[in-house]
Image 1: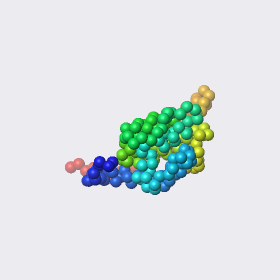
Image 2: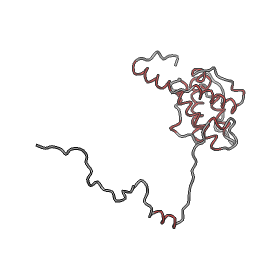
Image 3: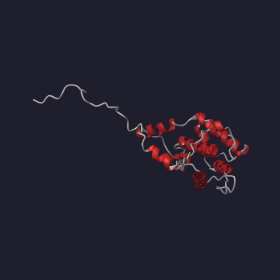
Image 4: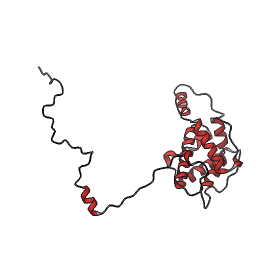
Length: 197
């Protein structure tokens, strides 16, 4: 982002709209969760968007976070800080691949450049929130934090009906079909008839 000049016109409006989606309250929750999940060794970022981005930018903290959620074999084999851009972006990509294995949907994922260049930090928050929600929902004992920070995802509630129950259900008129109870449109008026001269 250092080589990028100011944006003007439509580009500026689009970037301002993206930036307006960033939630400072969610940032505090995510920072607190990551600190509890990974331990005190990760430190704390400076308050604000840029501090949050700088804290996560090299991908090391994200790697530790995803590894802490897996009980068995760790998906991110090596996390080490590097000043080289491609190494940092590679570690972010490893986090994203591991998060997808954990169960985060592709629609909830951010792109590597969203974090590394600071283009869309709200998307980063969305991904971390989805990861936290999955950790709370799975309840495997690896989640460290307040369960009220993230909502539980809906889980499948499969039902098995007998053949008799299925046959009885065919005779019921669903509410979406409606029932007119003998009513008709007879005598209804929609204003004056069209005059054709």
